[in-house]
Image 1: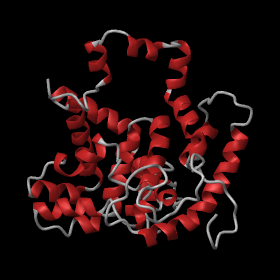
Image 2 (image 1 turned 45 degrees about the vertical axis):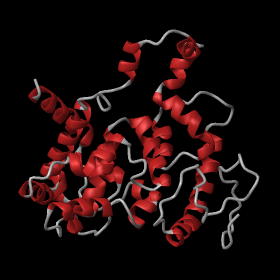
Image 3 (image 1 turned 90 degrees about the horizontal axis):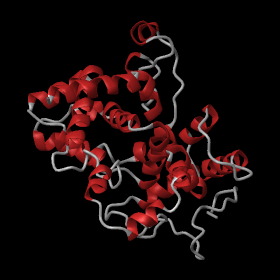
Length: 305
């Protein structure tokens, strides 16, 4: 479909008859691109990513052959981490999130809600504490991120503290929007693939990956406006555009220092001499994030009562 590419792959723009144009003002998913969108960089990225999409689409078609329900498994988790083709995303997201099971158990429930009287209590239940007037959940998660940074990236935490800068000023949109309109759309979709399957810890992994990869840049800041600008800068560029690299688990040599602190198999690029870049799924091992997030959330919640 694109010049210079030997692989023929029917990309997921099936709803339109015209060939997708990488320089369109509206991207293939229906989102308007920003004024400063780097079309040349995107074309360069997509020429490589197209081959990856082709390979993954073939594997996913075999995995989902027969139309059986999506069942969580080690294989499915590995596939999801490498990206879900758009043609299968709706089915996979509905399956791994539990939404399909809820629909099957409660047929016609949504239609009933639309036709019935407004239920304020239901609306309040749907609107989580991220979006309540107090935004307690959002504040808690930002405090958790701050503590994770303090533990793993103390220099960045020290910079924030020295300027009296609250995390809410630099990362609120990351959490509220789940990185929509923050990171490139291809990368956001890859994040959501993992989010629906593995839960909210993925948000913290992404945030830590961004900060860790750009720690040196952030530490160049000398004022509050400068810090805020640095945090905008780290959501742009090739590191976040190349979504497959961004989400991929990196293979790194084991280090005795790492194993002594984090246990066998844990990794942290900061103590390795490999020079490899951060990735979202590498961060999960580096921080033992799944348990640490839960611990910090509990502490933050208790401190508010």
